[in-house]
Length: 333
Image (cartoon, rainbow, N blue to C red; front, side, top):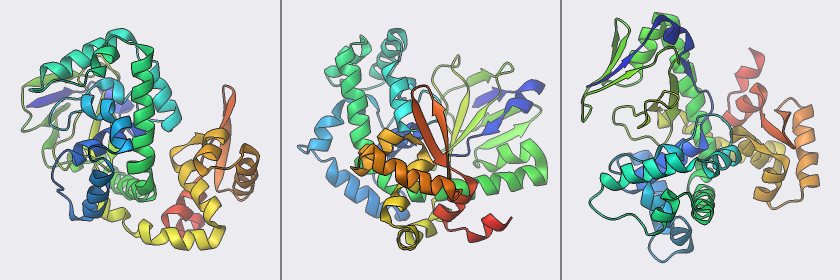
C-alpha cells in the first residue's frame, strides 16, 4: 500500500497539469514499447515504433542510452522527468542541467534493480560527464521526433477530454471525487490517498507542498506512479482516456485544409510550446518564415507569445486549442 498524506494546505495546493508534458510522454511511451501491446487503439503506433527502433537502425543507435536507463519493467530515473510544464526544449535543457549527485543516485538505483547491466555509457552518465548527457538528450530528442510527436494532436485532444472529465468530478464531489476518479486502485479518505496493490509499503507526507496530478497519454493502465525521491516536488501520474481524443486524428486533415499544412503544423507544435527558432527548425523553415506564420496565428487569436530569457515562446490560446481539437462550440462559450 502506498499512502500519500495531505495537510489542509496540501488540499489547497493540489492541482492538475492541463497540457501534456513531452518528457513524461517520451519516458512512458518507451515503457509501452518494451512490452507487448495492451491497447488496440495503439496497435498501429506500437508496431511502427518498434520497427523504427529495431536493432541496427539509426534511431536505435541514437536512443540506446535513453532506452537503456529507462527500463520498462521497474523504477526509472527521476531526472528523465524534471518537472511537468514547458516544452521539449525546456525539458531537455533541464535534463542537461541535472546535478551530478542526482545522476549518480538515479543511475545507481536503476542499476541495482535490474538483472542485466546498463549500457556502458550509463557509467559516464552516472559520473555526470557532459558527453554522456549530450548523448542522452540528443537521443531523447530524436526518439521524440520519430515516435511521440507524430501522435501529439491525439495526445492533446485526449488531455482536453480528461481535463473536462476531472472538472466535472470536482464540481460533483470536490477534491475527494477527483482523486477517487483517477484510477480504481485509488481511495481518498481522512486526508490520506491510498494506492492499493503497490509493490511495497510506502508513505509520502506532502508537508504543505501540495500534489501535482499529471495526466499521461502513454501511461500504462496500471496504478498511478510517482517519483522515486520523496524530496522532489510530489507528482502523481495517471493515464488519460485515449479513446476520448481519437476524433482528433480524423480532424487533422480538415484543419490542414482550413489553415494550410504549415500553419496546422505550427498549431500542433504550439500545443507543446516552443521558441520561434525551434519551431522553424522542426518545420525545416527559416525563423523569419516561421515568425510570419506565427504572427498571423497570433493576430487571429490562435496562439500567444511571451518572452523567456533571450527567446520568444509560443503556445496555443484557448481558441487555438479548440480549433486543433475540433471543438467548434468552445469558441462561443
